[in-house]
Image 1 (cartoon, rainbow, N blue to C red):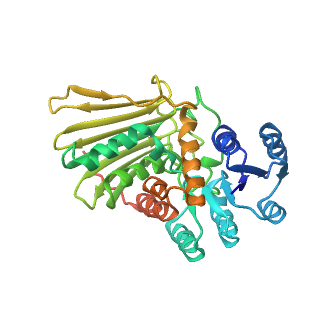
Image 2 (image 1 turned 60 degrees about the vertical axis):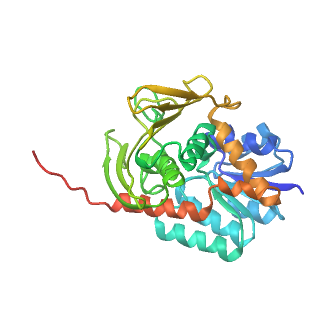
Length: 345
């Protein structure tokens, strides 16, 4: 079975992660690229040997039938329309995070996927980190004891005025409902749910640092889990850190486990166990990332193709589903709506 795939959006991450993963997969043929900027679509098509380029989704879907898989790497506000169009045609979806700009829409998209019995995954690809998976295995095995507290962060200098690029659609309220919270915070929030289960309550503080910012540059959340565990989350596109700049510190009754995903670390990852005395007890070796941080998206897309062909049902233990992404979106909505309570000193 050959998967006929197309991609909507040909920006940096599509060219760095999605398209290389798709064209390298022996079971996938990429038949088309689409982007409102037709020049970008044509350049991506030429670079990756894709035969067709379009300036819109509808024309691509109409002309490239039958299509098996649509990868959506477009701005957040485009996600719902593109997902609906694909699901209505029975086309499997891979959509970059977040699923939508609000929980109601996310729930409706999840319901449509269920009603049409169409497979859909959302780009919470850091589940594919070998270090994160080792942490989850240790947690499930009871090696960390009872989980008490989790600290998660994702930040790097993507939009730092001295180092990064200019703010783009990601900080434009016409395209995104939140800034760093959606761009980075949604990733580590998904990891929290995957590791510790449902969140029952959330509070937040969103900060604009840059004078031109319309959405948050730094987001901090407090999380309460249904299990009784607690947590904190920090996300920013200004704070120092090498991409992807993810850190997880999971405190259990038997000690601390820490994961770092950072391109400045040899191999790209580090996983360490700490004893109750705060000393490093063990550093767990994980295989180097062959393709750097884009390796996570490559493994994610490979799992989705495997799920499409029914070859390995075990992929659903990791594969982020549209239903799980809708759960994450509800917490993001809660964070946006959370009323800050301050005690003046």
